[in-house]
Length: 102
Image (tube, rainbow, N blue to C red; front, side):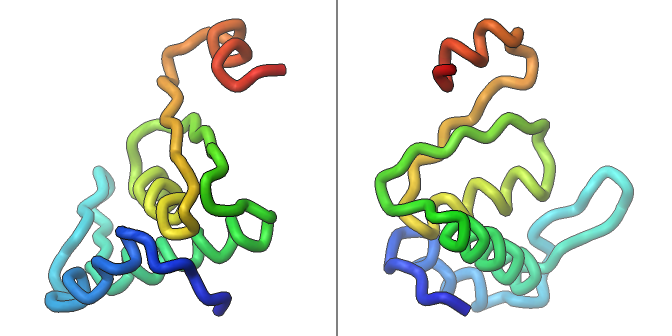
């Protein structure tokens, strides 16, 4: 896997891994993710952002409902040093266009 910059979420990996088998997320359907699984998923998201060419300091907008995938994407952005901008899913298209630009 690509080396990630040492930014805050990645430096907390040791804390997360202190209890790797504990449940980190329980989804509405009853499925769960442990801290170890969550950390691995966040690292995969970070690697995908790096592969896409995201660099530290770049702004990434995420338009998605609250979910485990949202958490993984958000932490993945932070792991590569990006700045995550959450977009409200209730915004209209003109409002979204104003925020992200054309």
